Amino acid sequence: MADTSTGLTIDSVSMRFDLPNGSHVQALENVSMHLEPGDLMSVLGPSGCGKTTLLNIVAGFLMPTEGQVVLNGARVTGPGPERGMVFQQGALFEWMSVRENVSFGPRMKGQSAAQYGENVDHLLNVVGLQDFKDKAIYELSGGMQQRVALARCLANDPDVILMDEPLGALDALTREKMQGLVLDLWKETGKTIILITHSVEEALLLGERLVVMAPRPGRIHKEYRLPFAERGVGADLRAVKKSEGYEDMREEILSMIWEMEEEIMGRVESAS
Image (cartoon, rainbow, N blue to C red; front, side):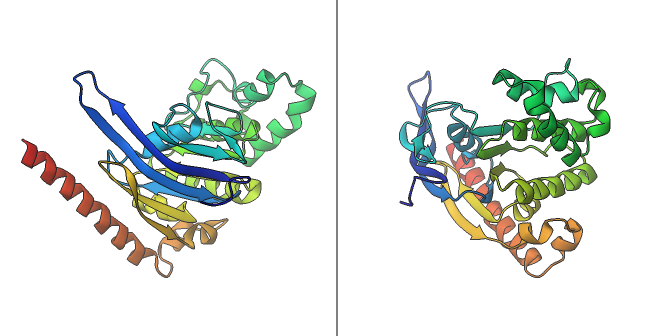
């Protein structure tokens, strides 16, 4: 196992859910990995492979039945400000303004406007919302709301950003723009990012490391080291999709996941 004094270590994590009828679901089994500070990792796999369960364990929302998560030498035992979460739906305060949402974390820490103001304004500039800072959340489009969610997460200055399908509800054009923003933020901030997605294209674009998980029980099937995230920083992502190796890798991973899905369907049909 890697040195756990720095970075994020997922150490032999298993998760079992016991059901009221006496049966159980083994959501994860013996998942281990280590992320160095600044790593950008996407996690991909068929439905039921435990992607979100793993993310919730890293966030501290769930405690694993076996194993542990260690961040910078400290065991994760619950939610904490050093781990920020961005959900598929922004989970924003609808009645607050954009600026009030982004500054919420620092205010809850007891910081004054003089302490957090400059950083909040900088983040609003970075995500392109400076002209919308006084707007209420309900006045914004879905893409703008996800920009607010990203800025709010960054305002807490977490070591690790956890993203659960954060772009899944957006239209294609907005999604591509947000993918570019995620890459720019990763490069500018140096944060460790783990992003869960169902999109192979998104996983390829937003993962220096790409982990493919297999289901029942959820486990790591294969891991890749990829060049596309680095190529995409400040670049045209459509050009990156045409770059060397992208299409071959896309087809390889799509075929891998299709085989898993067919295996799952075969099990279901056999059981019925």
